[in-house]
Length: 313
Ligand SMILES: NC(=O)c1ccc[n+]([C@@H]2O[C@H](COP(=O)([O-])OP(=O)(O)OC[C@H]3O[C@@H](n4cnc5c(N)ncnc54)[C@H](OP(=O)(O)O)[C@@H]3O)[C@@H](O)[C@H]2O)c1
Image 1 (cartoon, rainbow, N blue to C red):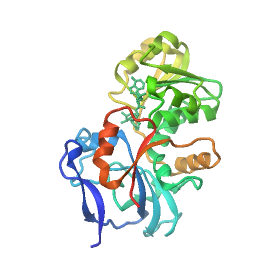
Image 2: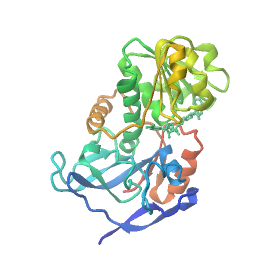
Image 3: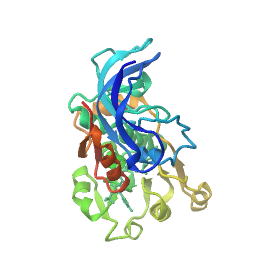
């Protein structure tokens, strides 16, 4: 069996449980690709899984390789693979229930993979799959956001929020975004119509009658969000616990909560939008794979601007 370098979790715990070491190189099965990883992005779910917060949902057999956002080159196309061949440059959103891409190689399903955007490098391509598809599924699949509607996006400077702002603007919506003082100029760069500094103002004092709230923060931020919706509006959340459907019904609004799923055709549409210059990833920090611990400390702070990416090749 061939080996590769990887970062693995042998026991749940703090960033120190991440071990940079040798691991067996995986072998692709039917409908799967072995991808030589060039870059893997870091998402908040990575540290939540590392800490053991999600072990009821994903009962992993340890050791586990985290990292469910990858960009790289197809090394081997397994049996029955139809759309890809050795040498294709791809990006993918591997299944959270399986090993991820903090490694020299990862096995991904064809159904989780698309050709990477041609106009950007692997570091920037890796920064896209989870956050862009989450924003896409929230805005278009759940909220059916339409041209001319008004949307409030919480955490607009984060990984998911920064794509949500760009996708909502592409759709022709009026976008209001919240972030801290440090990120106000960044919100303008992303293209928001109105930027709210949550350190200086309460958004519920200044926003009224929106069609959609996209909640990437939860807690008190979500609790104060109901009243800024217009009747019939929708609050879409991606942070647990799920919003109360009873509360929504009492206020005459709707709510949705979901876990984003891998979707190859959405990744292909997103790649086309990137290549046509409509949307782009923002990478704040690039670290070598051996510094995954540092990357986890950064994501766990909850104040990332854009993305943190591990460079592998
Ligand atoms: N359900 C799903 O399928 C799904 C998918 C992806 C992500 N998620 C979850 O969604 C959350 C966000 O993910 P992410 O990747 O976007 O995280 P991220 O890149 O770490 O961004 C978090 C952002 O939140 C902002 N923030 C913190 N407190 C805020 C507040 N009170 N009001 C407004 N903004 C605030 C931060 O900006 P400042 O520094 O300016 O505060 C930061 O930019 C995470 O909890 C993640 O696990 C869920």
